Image (cartoon, rainbow, N blue to C red; front, side):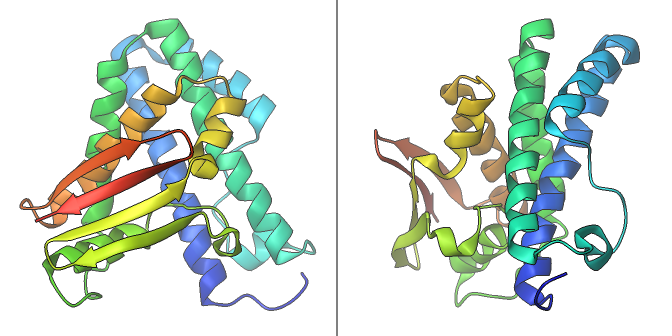
Length: 214
């Protein structure tokens, strides 16, 4: 392993694990609704093409002799593309968008209960910082997201359009569905921390914004 693992690498890997956790819950929900056999076939196919879930081991052991940054970048690509491909296959087979939305929102709520809300100078900022430390945004050096407005009653978080869409497009998923699922996950997350917080996602051709108000 080149270089030394630091807090930022573990922070980033925790975000990767959050998506793997959500993937497991998607699979479990569809198995419960439609039966394990059919869902397992789809999952096996997707993971064969896009990579397996990470085994439960220390990050140092997972990286091994690889470079830290290339390994993390590869893991980010794998986890997001695999999740998108899984969503595509499940929609093609079962066409149950309602179940997907439910899983995303409930997963956001669950993850929020484990989040650190000690950062920030006010209620809204504390919830937002918890979200920012949980939601995978690519490698920090990519600088694809930025806070463009930060007041006690409103925060605007702007993203380059390719932040997540790049992976979902690669998997052939309708981007309206991607935005709907992320929107519901974020809503579930922030409202679990503070029910007074409202969230909306505004999308344009070159960027999209997550807007939080209280």
